[in-house]
Every structure is written in structure tokens, then in C-alpha cells.
Length: 203
Ligand SMILES: N[C@@H](CCC(=O)N[C@@H](CS)C(=O)NCC(=O)O)C(=O)O
Image (tube, rainbow, N blue to C red; front, side, top):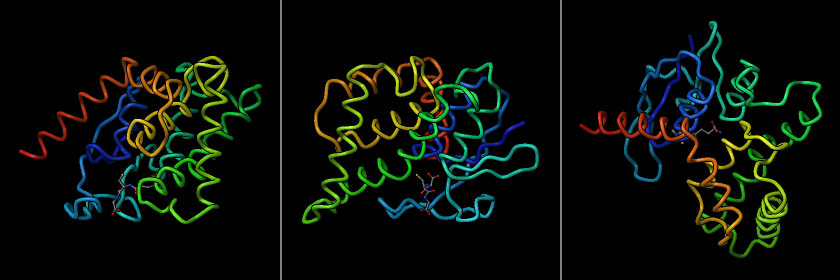
């Protein structure tokens, strides 16, 4: 059994989506977190994450943290789900590249734009433009980032784009890509679960 330590409307929401895609049994353990944007919330002693953040999962007595670490772990868990190209397959290298690119390039560019840190920084502007260009050039000739099917790389990147869409310029290609991913049945189920959980905790 997998346990997800989850705070609604946070980076752990997409792990609910991933677990729904995977179709394995799991339980959600709600935890509170400090929310820097509002100043609300507090670290939760019930959260096993070493930094008291989310997401974190427990599986087979192991603790896995970091969105990309969890995505890589769960994407490989059941090959029948078809969420990750297998080790040794033609698309595995591209898949690993996108996961790394998401964590090291896209998140940086997105938060730089959202925080205003792009202004006055030609280097950050260059990196931000490179992120936009990489997305545009890829999505101009394929529906998904890796091969011709949805993967965990799409789940991470589309969910981040959905959250931080204003950090990037208008683009019909990006909008269509985000819509394609977030309207998947598993994504819609996860959204409903996340909203229900959020309402419960607000009550
Ligand atoms: N690099 C981590 C970041 C995790 C993270 O910052 N999560 C936020 C929620 S979106 C959190 O738990 N914040 C609590 C805090 O900053 O104390 C990941 O991707 O898993």
C-alpha cells in the first residue's frame, strides 16, 4: 500500500493525479504545511518529510520525497500503466531529460517570472526564454513530450504550467497541451478528490 502525505492545492495534488493514473491502491494522509504565499498553515509533526513539506510517499517501508523522485518511482512501479518508457527503451533518455529539465530549468524559470526576479537579470531572461522555446518547438510537432503518449513527464510539466500559466507568454500550443493533459479522466478524479479534501480541512 502507498501512503501519500498530502496538502490540498499544493505540489502533492499532482501526485494524487499520478496515483489515479496508476490505478494502484493508496491512502491519503492529510497534513498541514506552512503556506509562504499566505503565511497560513504550520509544519505538521505527522509529516515524515525531512523538511515537513509535501509531497512525500511511503511504500514498502521506504520514504520517497521530491516531486521528481516520486514521479520517477511511481512511473516505473507498474509498466502496465504505460506512464514511463522502460529502462533500455528508445524513449527512456528523452524521458529522463524532461524530468531533469522540469526540476532544474522550468521550475526556476517559472518562479523567477512569478517573483519578478527576471527584471534586471539578462541571464534569468535568457533561461526563461529558453524554457518557452523548448516547449514551443516540442509541442509544435507532438502532442506529448515523450514519444506519442502521455507520460509522467507530461503530468509534472502540464500541472506546473496549469499552476503558473501567467509566468509564460500566451501560446495556443501550450494552452492546448495543458488542456489535453488536465482533462484526462484521472486528472479530473484527482481534482475532485483534492477539492473535497480542501473543503473538509477548511470546515
Ligand atoms: N522540491 C520540492 C518542493 C516541495 C515544496 O516546497 N512543497 C510545498 C508545497 S507546494 C511545501 O510543502 N511547502 C511547505 C514549506 O515551505 O514549509 C518538491 O518538488 O517536492
